Figure (cartoon, rainbow, N blue to C red):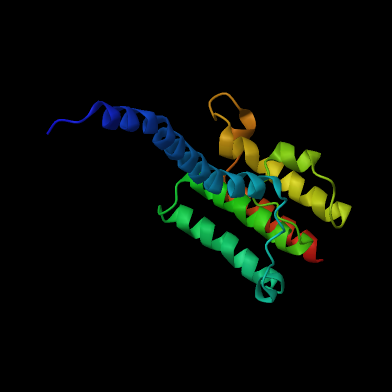
Length: 168
């Protein structure tokens, strides 16, 4: 089939139009995905509401969680580093629920910089407990005396003590 010169010119003239439409649709698709992501990252997230069951959970149940970590470590189902991490998670979760603010992902530096919430004594107890757990959890025991001397048993006692001080 032979195309006339007029048909060829018409087809060539419409290439920029089709290209423009394709680029426009691609930009629209990107905008539809990117704008909500950008806006959601700039909007402060409200604290997740805690269930009344969690807030009213007895201190003894938290201490049972600490004892379960210790048992798991002692029976070999949990290694030492994971035991320290789990104890720190319990301490942060307990404090988060009691203070009504999410502290579960706060590092020690974050906690030191964080505006005090609730009772100073309670907030300080959390910071002290996390501070004591840090060498055991993160430092090299060969070069750090605190990490070398800490045991999972003593770390569990620190978390128990924090919970006890909190409720007495």
